[in-house]
Image (cartoon, rainbow, N blue to C red; front, side, top):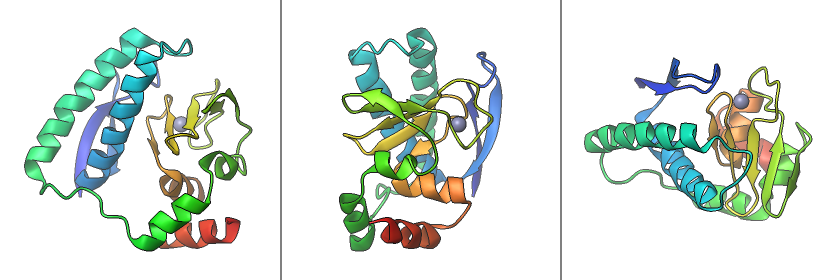
Length: 165
Ligand SMILES: [Zn+2]
């Protein structure tokens, strides 16, 4: 169990927030977030403070290198059942069980249920089937969302998602 510090956007400055997450989790989540953030920057999304995110991604890339140097190459191995469930369900429909999402094309926004959100910080990408909160910094796939919002483990999340399909 690694206890790493990452920047938080909570107060709009460079406040550092400690989050309990395994190294494996960080590598996976940040790989996804970096890819997503890079793509959003390319698309020049207007909701986005680009200066802040260039800085944020820079920090994450350095942190990622540190983490990867400590870890074996295998990052995340999905079991068949995880893959099957993720193929069958739509992340937007699942998250809409919890919050109202608005959006266009494949990008949706809503109030994050994981922190006290005063503006729609939760971003959901139906194409990538990923979500990210710009307020609390959490993100991942649909299973990560269910785990956090329901405060259950992966087994419980799979069961819940299985019931939604
Ligand atoms: Zn949040």
